[in-house]
Amino acid sequence: MKMIIISGLSGSGKSIALNVLEDLQYYCIDNLPAAMLSALADQLLSSTNMEHEHVAVGIDARNTPADLADFSNILKDLKSRQLHIEIFFLEADNPTLIKRFSETRRRHPLSSDEVPLSEAIIQERNLLEPIASEADLHLDTSRTNIHQLRELIQSRVNSGDRTQLSLLFESFGFKQGIPVDADFVFDVRCIPNPHWEPRLRRLTGCDSAVAKFLEQHDDAVKMFEDIRNFLESWIPRFEADNRSYMTIAVGCTGGQHRSVYMVEKLAAWFTQQRPGILHRHRELP
Figure (cartoon, one colour):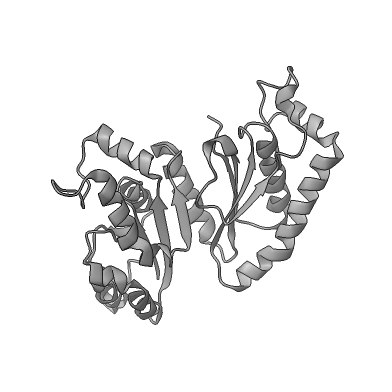
């Protein structure tokens, strides 16, 4: 039986993630006390409840601080059973979370007349750190809308059902910040920039004209080969360590040309070598 634990900051999209898993035929339980996870596992593994082969559980900061602090021991106890456990941790930057709560006029579960929203978010990060440190997959939703998050969760879960590591290649622009959920970050700002070619400025790295421009430059070709060779050497080491998910981020200045081209090329290459390859472009519509 597989159990996915969904946790993260309030306003980061945990409810959306659980809804997606429910659509994927997971038996979903939200806001379960962490101390009850072992009892739930025993109940689900009993002979009369084995119809629930895929379970998702939401764990948030409304748990007692003691249970959250003891999460590593709770997780060890869970893994001692016949369960395949994965933990998804969703987060976003503070300005984004504040904006989301302001727009929806929802109340943060840890805020009060004495605790302002900004302080409540900091408290929540600290409380959930024991879960975040155990997470198999970190998802930064700061620049992700509802539809993108749904697609990303669905893609990662479906690819994660395979026995091999699920790889997500993501392009981004350094002007908008580095993705906090990236396991590896590669900077391709040193290769020629198609932005300075007027005929290419409105295009993206998905367009053949941009690819042709970059492939005329030895630096771009060598950058691809070096990143590819690095990943081919080290991905098997992470698989041997039982990693289920990995995010490889490639950045350029604006996230429109060079990083998009490199992600397209890397994703195409690794798709020929292995299953479970995903790619997305953070700054493109």
